[in-house]
Length: 480
Image 1 (cartoon, rainbow, N blue to C red):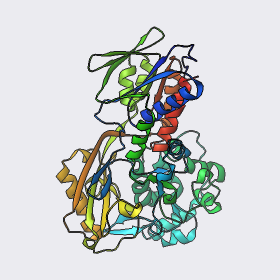
Image 2: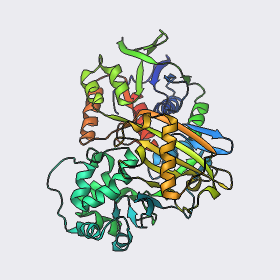
Image 3: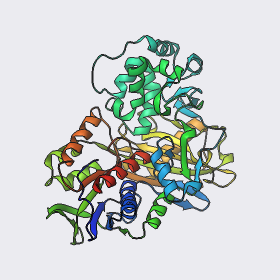
Image 4: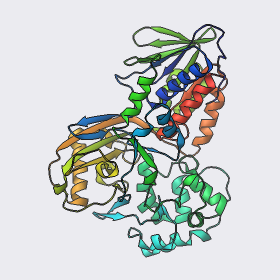
């Protein structure tokens, strides 16, 4: 977010406070630290984090020889900002791709795991062969999807929901059986509300440029590597990277590199106000910290609470961004406990099924160094917009729901060797129709306030790369 910075220092040290110690806050602080060194700005940077640890949604733990990711387990390399940051902080050699040979996705359908044929990109095929091989769609559903190239472009201007887009172009069966579990699982969203322009701009662009999603995929002419480059089904698995020893390494390396940056955990911020030409930041401990510039790297609703007295208009817009809760349930088994062989990275579940479980990743098949030989590590995702209460259930209930799904789909009846539950309440911003217009209005209001910038996963992408990019833009804006 662009805003007016406090300018170049004239000999005195300038203080800047970053509120929020998740990946957005750490990336913002790191970019400020880099710019201070590059331009001799002499910044004194402080990061204030309310919780006992840094990293936010990034959480990695060891259980014996098992490496368990509570939150994000990887990032897309085609969005360059995370990979570039890893290289700048000296951990580029630690990054590993997904494992070869098993880059397939499945959908739980009628008690079985049905594979998405090679050549499907999320919810649409690149040709007739993958469409005909798709066992999830009925013959009428396939015929309706094949007719997509004859559907005229949308004449209306403006945003629409993903559900409206898929239903209009590919048919209702494609929406219910493929798009909702595939795309809804990625965004923990209700596709009837999810913005096509904010969540899937590549699909919006396919229709706008080629007049047809299927025509665009067949031509391989989609921009930004959206399709055509990979034969794997579902997400573009070959484009994912992760640190060999877990995502927490990114957090650790950032903290280790910024030696001059003060990183304060267990320090909730209760209020901010203008103070002279800068800011006064109040903490729950009763301290009042002064700074010339401020970056709020927070969920939208937390930023709104702090900005009500500063910019009521921006606060109202931020409050309009809805959040959903999620949880992950990680289970480890012996390979012999899985009677049904599984060759893939994971599967998704249609909405309203399996006690709120929206998908399951075979972590030990997706990445190396996640589990010892002879074992498998599985991670299930629970909650989101279609099952808003599921993530808040007791650990035993969550584990039981996941085990029931594994029993139905893979005949797994054994007791897991390891079980871990991680919860992330109000962590998933919902990019509802009109989201990008809302973000533009927020940016306009914040641009009126000197020496203030915002960052977070509620802007234009929920993934790690987008969070880093937005945070670095905020830091750069403050240094202008």
